[in-house]
Image 1 (cartoon, one colour):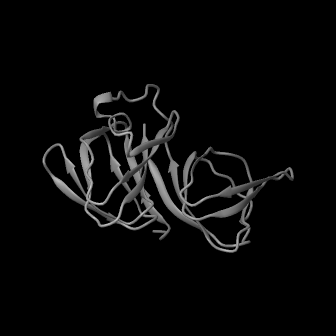
Image 2 (cartoon, one colour):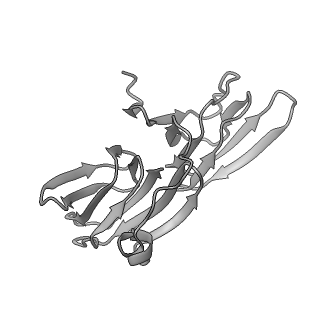
Length: 202
């Protein structure tokens, strides 16, 4: 499998793309909507066949919605690599959004650590931080599943409602996928604060 690809299933494909400085891509287009997590500061030019050019400026840890679109080329106009975690969404959103219990919604019960970035018919995307040694409240994720993208190294544990505990480890740019709805809580067992982007797929 392509080493850039971290996850590939019936719901999502998650890959880490590296755009080299001033290495313009061939003309191409994206057939799927995507969530984009930028790991580096960089400028990027998106050029279209009609001659128009979008001049974009990304900051490290920016998260953006990128809808499917027409042909274009892309060029990293900075002097260093631009790494992007791309979450491609393979299925349209459901006709009815999954129900949420506000008493178990992490964005409601823990606003100090969870911040909504955006939501649409396919995904809800939020950023979750945790101090070293901190532990989440019990909460639920609804829908088809969720991608977790690490903005920092993580040494953590996840406790499930059935009593099982599993480790969760990774470095900046790593991504993991979990299927389906779940009730659980996570702990940051490391010595540094953790910072994650969660992409809940509806």
